[in-house]
Image (cartoon, rainbow, N blue to C red; front, top):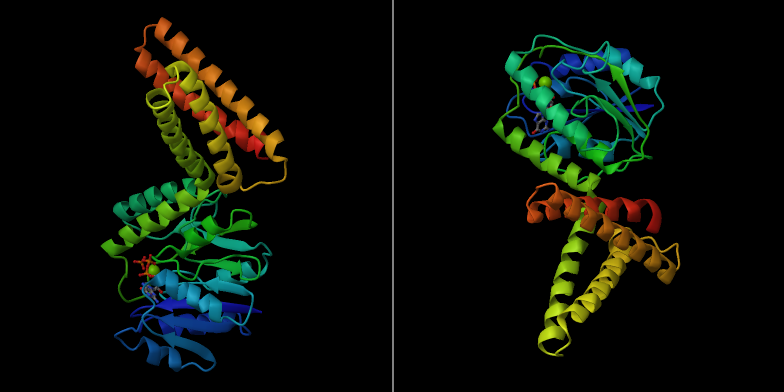
Length: 336
Ligand SMILES: Nc1nc2c(ncn2[C@@H]2O[C@H](COP(=O)(O)OP(=O)(O)OP(=O)(O)O)[C@@H](O)[C@H]2O)c(=O)[nH]1
Ligand SMILES: [Mg+2]
């Protein structure tokens, strides 16, 4: 059994026919309309059908409306589709043959098509899709599709997600979910007006930023810990040299060790949150990676400078390489 969730905003000209088509294609499905308090007769038109659940309130956008519909659905298998006829109901049948956690009706795989789009719209869609594809861990060709199925038992969704592109936030939040794309033809709007407005672009950038920060969460935390390490290092070097009158090179050795230790502790309990290995065994591994990264950093500094680069520039390349070695070494070994 399926629940079909249809977000609407001023779709009086199309909603009746869309519901009719859904009923013809999947007669036993549950139909849920999530309406953004349309100012026209959308709700009245939907009410002309029997057995349709209608929620009409200010949802604050397409994504929250769709997610609300999913929470209200009686079935685990939920399909979200547009009201304006752009999503052909024939594809609903194809959805029912798929068992994956997330199934996407895709415009951008072989046999997928878009009917009559302007060059500008095509370009913007391709650009948005490219940015979105890189922001998620799965290999998906159409992460901005508004036509998809999720199994709400196995897929996590954050009902506070904002914006327009609900599928993108669902993909970002479910890196391990099984995903499949099926082709469909994106038709012309049957009637009525597009709801795409400049705010959609701003909302999209917000969703995109969230997806990127989720995808690179571990690396970003690792970099933040690295910055705290610089502060700890500088503070101890200064304190020991100025107030304890320790020779500055000896202060530096102590400062490096303490900052490696504080970095290690923060990375163990915050960045990777892995406590499978013994604290000190893992600490020795962390230290070894730090040493390796330091050696590579200095080698690049030396080779770069000797081959004519400015030593500060060569050092920056060394630091960047060292950071990557540190990150991947710890990711694949220390904290695995
Ligand atoms: N509940 C709710 N539904 C919305 C909102 N904005 C759009 N919708 C519905 O979401 C679906 C997609 O919106 P469309 O305006 O068709 O967006 P689009 O398909 O990307 O653009 P077009 O090709 O111009 O139609 C339609 O069924 C709209 O009625 C909103 O803010 N709230
Ligand atoms: Mg549309």
